[in-house]
Length: 269
Image (cartoon, rainbow, N blue to C red):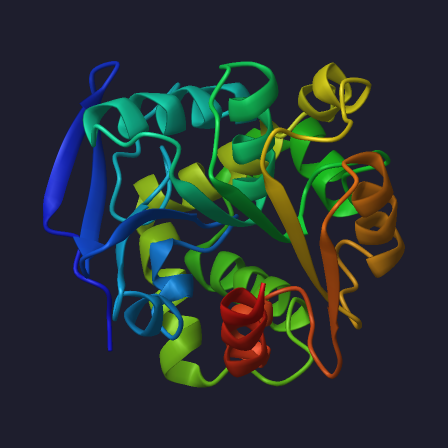
C-alpha cells in the first residue's frame, strides 16, 4: 500500500508534498536519499493504529518540487523540518528518521532548537567520515552525470539502490523509487542531491553531540555497506543512546529488507 501524499506546503517558494495517517500522539517520519516517504509504507500504517503519523518528501525528493539551481543541501532539510513541525502545530513530537533524514533530525535539534519526545535514528548519516568515492566523483562532475543518457542513468540508479539492500529489491519497488529521479528534471535532481551533500553539515554538529533531552533509540542493519554499523555504535556512545538494536540479514535500506524487525524495535522501545 502506498502512503497518500495529498497535502502541499510552501517552503521558501517551493512545494513540499506531505501526508498524515492515524490518530493519537504525533510521530514525524523522515526518509533518506535517494528514497522518499514511501520508504515508510510498510511501517507507518501499523504505527498509525494508535498514533498520528506525519511524513513528507524532502526538498528535491519524491513528489516535492525539483528545479534547476535548487538548494537541497542538508541545512535546507533541517530548516524544512522545523517549518513543517511549526506548520503542523506539533509540540515535541516523536521523530523516526533514516539516512539523511537522521541528519535533518539531529541538525533540527542542535541548530534549530527543536525538541522531541523521543528520537529513533535508523542507519543515519551522522558521524564522520562520510561520503563514498561515488559521491566525491559526482560532486566533481555533476554536470556530466546530469547529462548521462537515460539508459545509463537508469542502470546506475538501479545498481545504487540494489547495493543498498542485503536482499534483491523487486522490480516494482525499484521502479517506485526510480520514478522521481527519471526524465531531465528528475535525473538532474538526483545528482544535485549528491553534489550538495557536503560533510561540513555533519562536522558543524558532531562536536555538540552528547546526552539529549529526549530518549534516543538507534536501529542499525548489521550488513549496511553504505554506513557501517561501527558508525552507529559510535553515534550511540556520543549521544548516550537508550537502546541500540542490531538487525541481522539487512542492508542500508532496512525498511525494505526487514520492515518487521524495524517495527518490532519501534514498538518495543
